[in-house]
Image (cartoon, rainbow, N blue to C red):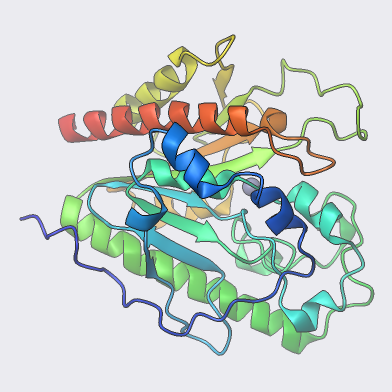
Length: 321
Ligand SMILES: [Zn+2]
């Protein structure tokens, strides 16, 4: 039985508190991609007006670190859990790193790509506040080894603040649990595109890019899934991305070369062993300048079109399974 697609699956958020970003850099770079222009040029399934916020009820004293958008109308979801940049004020004043440094390790612009799926989960909190792709005991960075050698905090974080960040973490996983339970109930099986991006000029602005042999344009992480079970879906995703008529070339798409997927897909595969398939997609940041945060709208649109085609292919394969 199909439930009408207009039925919200989680109560609409009435009191979502926007945490002010520690600086407005993210807004500045995001402003480079005005929605109206994109809506005209990018053949996406849903533009902003048809992609309303449907989830995000605060279940603790702090806001959820994500928004759920779109409608649960097909068994395909996309997530951009590292797209967030905001750090809540009481933590922001303890940060030892600036917004530009944060932005470099976050996944800016991945939030634009969730619209290739009917349902999107977009992170709103910076991974430097709480990293939703790490196990709970490492979700708040405390030592430089957890965060690319960066000393994130001016002083050790008070436990009460860590506890707040972990309440947001728990609320995120509770929200995802509700969403995926409903997806499983409606469709039996579902696929999540877990969208990320990664740096390849780590040695500094203008430095030589990292060796392309170990740094594909698109790294498809399938490390925690039952790969055989989901072969039709994953193989189709990879083929669609690799064969997409990308401007001037083809994308170099390879599996588990640099990343195998993080905690978020592992958690879903563990909780939904027969029904859930998460394809972890790490886009190399060739679509932006990772040091200035400057996006390249042509690349961002082209990647969105590639993902959109791959999403359609995934849905086709799911229907056949
Ligand atoms: Zn990421």
